[in-house]
Each structure stands twice: as structure tokens, then as C-alpha cells.
Length: 415
Image (cartoon, rainbow, N blue to C red; front, top):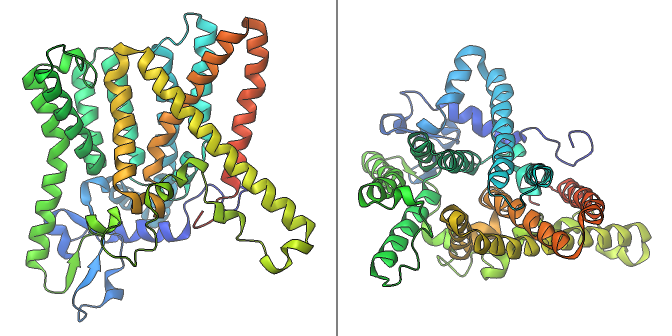
């Protein structure tokens, strides 16, 4: 991948500049510093005399490790060790995916369980959504890591460590934790008003069904959101030169203006299912000479086949994940929330999902790996005996991974 793919496996140039700016802005000379913020923008280029410039700000606590790295070795240390930490986080999330699947006991046979765990790890790690996080990682990388760690600790009855991991997940990405807390609240209310207790244990493990635990869990998820909004409000109140903050909520939903070109409705928000935009197939093709160039025709056709194949695998994985959740009632407390939170975010923030195939869609990697592995295991187990099933499983395994690599190869700057 580092030599043959279009973008390699290192941070992209624009992201390196962002990281350096983030570290440099963690200092008292930046207004946001006193309110707990840094920025990926180069403030000096904006100019102090220009009013109402919008500055993209980020919490300092999410980037303290980068600042510490800079103290030991400057920019070179930030780039080298920062990338290394991101790759470890993505790899560890893949390992936790395999470990969680192993514990869920899709099958009783130890060899088959081990094979399924290895497959889940491989599918997650090689997927196009994980590959993008090597190039320009979002905070979703650490949100998923700490969320999976929380699930891992709950499975082993280490509830204090689970609560600590969930707290770190909430502070890693406040948007996901906010929606997750709302889901927990709705689930709890539905459980209390349901005479048949249909939602008992659906979205929460039994150990967290107590009211005080529920309040603590929801509070942890909501606190980063309210805290950041208060900090931004106070920062903007004290500033005369800039407007601090990213794009507004209506812009991300896609209802701010008819000129919002990235809002294509729900269908556009599901582009991530293919791992790449279809437009990636057209970037290196001269439309005028397409009909006369056999090479262009072959590339276009096989490029479309690659992305369409990923769409089919993604749809199969969604079906498999839903079946997996229904078949594991005791584990639905975490399987269903991840699924519902992701697709709630996808369907509400349609513009964001259409504009950014990276970042938000990274969470889908867990759903994809679990669902696809379960669906394949279900089919092979039902229609084939052990030896034929194993012989079919091996080419299926390599076929999926090779498709992942092919689609990742196609990733361009706006793929």
C-alpha cells in the first residue's frame, strides 16, 4: 500500500500542516488557549485586521499528546510518533473487534471461533474506511477504540475500567457520545413505560440498568457537548476579530441553503458503502477519448465493478449485523446502539456524510466486519459440512481482502 496506492499510508501533506498548526496554537498567544481550545488554522495568515473570519477550533485535551511529543523532538517527533499512535489505535480497534466477536460465541468450536476472530480483525483493518484513517485520521479513531475497550471490559466484568474507557470515548468525539446518551435515555424511558419490558437489556447491560448508573452514563455522554458549547460561547463573546467554531448544524444537515452542493439526500449520504466515490473512476479518464480508448474502457468498467462489489458486501454486512444482533439477545446492549447511532447520524447529517467519506464512516468498519463475518459463517454452516465450509471460507476471506485493497488503491484526495 505504501508504494502502489495513489496516496500511500502516511499522513497527507494538508493534514501534517493541520497537526503542526494545532500544536503551535497550544500556547498563550492564541485567544482560544484560555478557553481550552487550539486550532488547525494558521492564524497569522488570517490577519488580525480582518473581522469575522471563521477559525476552526479543537479541544486542547484531544491534542495534548501531540504537544508532549513536540517537547521531545519538535516537528519530526510529532509527525513520526503521531502517525505511529494513529496506526496503533486503528490496529488495536481491529484486534478488539476480533476479540469481542470471539467472546460472542458465533460457534462453539474453538478453531472456528479463532478463524472468525482473525477474519473480523482482517476485514476491519484492511477496509477502505480504516485505510483512510491512516491518511488523515479523525477523532472517530479514538472514539471507537475507547468504546470497544469499554465493551471489552464489560464482557470481563471490569466495570470501573469500562466506565473509564467510556468516559475517554465521550471526550474523544462529543457528537457520537451525545447521540448515544440520547439513545440510552430513550431506551430507559421505553423500558419503564413498557408493561412487557420488551426493551429490558436491549441497550444497556444489566449491571447499568440501575437508575444511578444510568444517570452517570448519560451524564458522561452529555457533558462534553455542553462543556464545548459553553466554551465556544464564552470564546466568541470575548473575541472581536474572529468567529471561532466549525460549520453550523444546519449546514451539516444540509438545510442551510439550496446552494449546498454536497447535500444529495439520503442516497448521497450512503456513498460510503462503496468505500470510494464513483467519481474516482472518472478522474483519470478523458471523456472525449473514452469511446476510442480500450484501456480507458477497461479501467472504467473494472473501477465501477470494484466499488459496486464493495456496495454489495456492505449491504450483506448490514443484513448480517441485524441478524447477528437478533440472534444474540444478551449482547444486544452494545450491538444495537452502535448500529442505531451510526445510521441515525448518517440519515440526519446527510450533507456531512456526503461530503466526507472518511471520518464518520470509520465507525461502519466495526459493523461491516461483524456483519459480514456472521453472514458468511451462517451461510457456510447451514449449507455445508465442516471441510467444504472451510475450503470455501478461505477463498472468500482472500477475495474480500483483495477487494478492500483494490478499492483503497483508488482513493484520491476527494475519493
